[in-house]
Image (cartoon, helix red, strand yellow):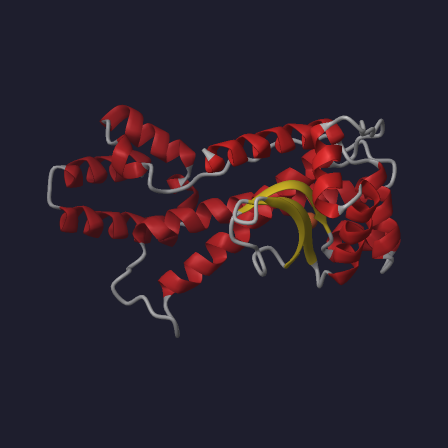
Length: 264
Ligand SMILES: [Fe+2]
């Protein structure tokens, strides 16, 4: 079946764009019918692009690769950690599925009231943010030797833009307590050119424009409820004791470079 699809695609490539679109829709329909949407992930794209040299067309779909994280945190149970990684894994799978569907969806009937295209675009951002915010969160927590230097870029930038490091902490915790199930992020705002904290509801509501994240905290209930019930404040304080400032310092360094480019 896989090779049949590849052959059909190869034949379509020599025809008109309209023909290629019809074939792509047909292939997507076949894949859906036999529950093989996964064929549109990286494996099939690599196969088609490498063998048939049609990389330019096929790279339109986005593909996320699941990453592995070791969570050493002493403040979360093992069941909590496993459940959280499983959730992340599903977000990556769903993002890839949606991205493949967007390659073939009919855009001619796009509508703000109701359309398959609109729903896919909404779900694309939701699952894409879920995948990448989880990666940022897993990477910047769970450091049992957490330590921040007063001469680090992280410390100096937070002190500069929040008045003091302690004030950044107070603001960050207040943001976590304000979340309605979502994320709290310290980010470089590329428009104000300052570091700010924001509260994101779910994965994609209230994401600021010009957003480059440097410190990410998961405050969905699934992140803490098993171990802390509704005590999000104790959960947040525990996670902040294990922030990985080496990872965060690397992000601040890149953010500073972004600012240099923007100011040049
Ligand atoms: Fe989460």
